[in-house]
Amino acid sequence: MLRWRKLGLVFSPQALPERPPWLAEFAQAPATLLFDDRVRMFFSCRPPAGPDGMYVSRSAFVDLDRGDLTRVLCVSDEPILPLGGTGEFDEFGTYPVSVVRDGRRVSRLLRGLDSL
Image (tube, rainbow, N blue to C red; front, top):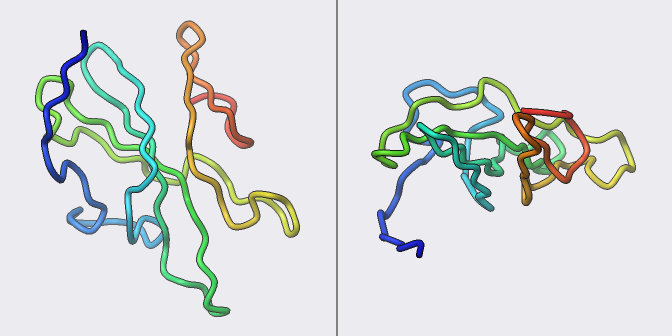
């Protein structure tokens, strides 16, 4: 049986020493995938508002050490999903709500990259 242990704040984009503008705020709507040595947590983040005052949602991931979930191993260098075109459902971004493993391939149930 899985036993939960509350850890508190594990990751915050604002705590990164260097971060790109698209990863300015938030790490919300987490979805996790377990590997032998790490836990990959997909999340949604936001860059600052655009000139029109509108926000977009970008999807990213952080790899956490499976033996010490407070230890960050890696953060994605760029968003894992592109923004949709004008008028498309994901014009302003999406949340990475579901990820599944199919053998060695990892897929998600959203439009964008075929594997991660």
